[in-house]
Amino acid sequence: MFVHEIGSGLPVVFIHGYPLNRRTWENQLVLSDSYRILAPDLPGFGQSGYENGLSMEVYSDQIATLLDERKIKKAMVLGHSMGGYISLAFASQHENRLLGLGLICSQAGADSEEAKAGRLKNAERVDKEGFDFIIEMMGTKLLSPSHNKGNSDLPEKLKMIMKEATSQGVTSALKAMATRKDQFEMLGKLSVPMFIAAGKDDVLIPVEKSVRMAEASKLSTFEVFEGCGHMPMMEKPQEFNLALRKFLKKISV
Image (cartoon, rainbow, N blue to C red; front, side, top):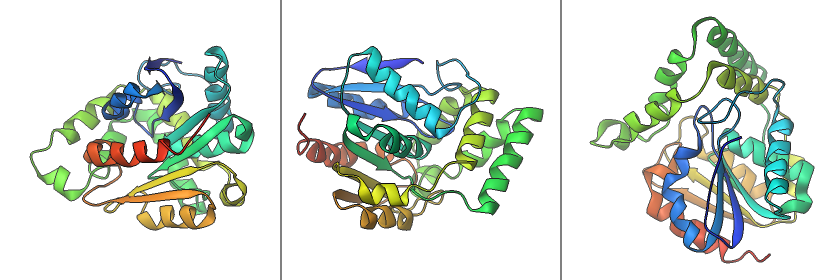
């Protein structure tokens, strides 16, 4: 698993969403002035090779192995979208290794039967024809209308990031998301500080899903970013980083 690592101090692991890679966190690398940043490419995405038999639990074990290899006992683990599902699985399996949990434009619930069927159908289609249709489909949904219609370079940048995936990585991620567990009960029992963030204009995971998680957690800090879709860390990086820095200051090793 390829990992971009920079900085020193309290470890913060950034887990990217689907079908993206670590480059979605480029604006957060400035946090390395105070923190040890680790941003991995998940298997089959970016510069990481593909692996068979993936699930949210396997992904989360890989994050634990990443920490083991670097002799990190505990870390702040922060995930975007599918990365949030992995972060929740990590919390379920490795709570003793968490300093804090971050969930960005994500959700704790499992897929509905309809959503599950849709993901599995897309996985079959990717196996047959590749994932260009996924890039086109996601390209219009990741950002707020202001970024899609304005002079922003983000739509093209995100397309380039998605093209760095492999068909196997995309297929495995779809299957893993379709079969993931509901984590609401676990979320309510977690005893670590939690940073929950949402984009006001997110059409992939509506802000209400983040509200539900914030309500379920006893120790959550909740942020909603105006003028943002599914990518607040890229759409409003300064505001996002300011909110995250404020949260991280509350965490002690």
